[in-house]
Image (cartoon, rainbow, N blue to C red; front, side):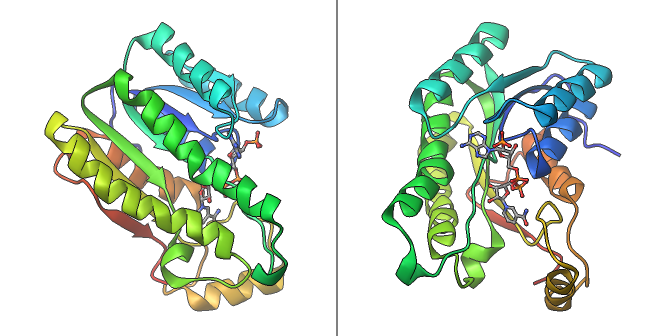
Length: 242
Ligand code: NDP
């Protein structure tokens, strides 16, 4: 079952694996044309391109690191050349590492910000001239930002920032009909976890299970679709009740 998004032209960052991949495939199955970027060439990106082709539609799979302004420029240029405009942008590309703050190298702080926060800035600001009236911006945050998690101060700092960014941006862009929301996933089974870690996480979740990437993709599709036409400036937790 897919939320209908017929004819929407959507850019999804970080879509060769995990949540971004489920988002891209779900949107394509709902009738959207999707441009997906990923960082590394390889089997994940190749199989995504094949799956999108099988679904049908006018799709693009592009290698671009959102932390590199030149790559973002090229990515948005490819969308402009192909479609002339974008109806939605899903800023999903993100990176995470687990390090005690006292030992966090400055370079790791900078790397995390460059992808999760500055990457979002570059993609959103670069996409502005392409946005169609009524366009939707969806930023993938994290429930971890609201609750706090040890060893992830750098990661949660970037994800918390997205909430303030979206709240301010919705006020600037609302008069042009552009909506901006954050979707904050809980623990989704894209991560490599030991059986013990899985059990511990499950015990913290009301639904007693990790989320699937498709369960995030459904809510993203709702935010991209016109069904959410009066929803902006919000951070929506999709976390099974944690
Ligand atoms: P994955 O690590 O499974 O996939 C990340 C995807 O993003 C890959 O396709 C990767 O491509 C791409 N990517 C990473 N860095 C960049 C970059 N700089 N430029 C372009 N593409 C990039 O991540 P998840 O699916 O688990 O997470 C997706 C988003 O959801 C992230 O923002 C994450 O913080 C957030 N999130 C995830 C949760 C979870 O439990 N999984 C929980 C809460 C939030 P490549 O392989 O080529 O590097």
